[in-house]
Length: 153
Image (cartoon, rainbow, N blue to C red; front, side, top):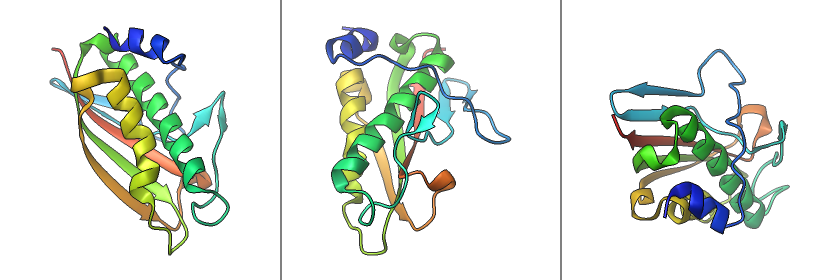
């Protein structure tokens, strides 16, 4: 089953890859490696989740935000590779969570991204991960996710 077929089976429509919000590109490729810029929880051109986890937002909110960030990252990978079937492996997911100083559920939040990636890419989705918390995030986004992926030459 292709990643696109898995998305359809999950009832998920892949959005257009979001544009950059600054003086950078959404993804870069060198050889067979694609690295995305950090993806924010954009939905239809609006940030769907803003604020800090452990303050204004719950762990469940963060999970949903991370899942949305990952969906935008998958859209970037499709843009880079042409088709998701050309993604050989998700190497690494880098996750950053905007949170209150005492919030410790960062891994649970980022599982929203990891579980979606694993569901869409199967064995090729198994990845390493960074999980960090921050007091201040760009545009007050709750979560941001970056990808490192190997794609076919």
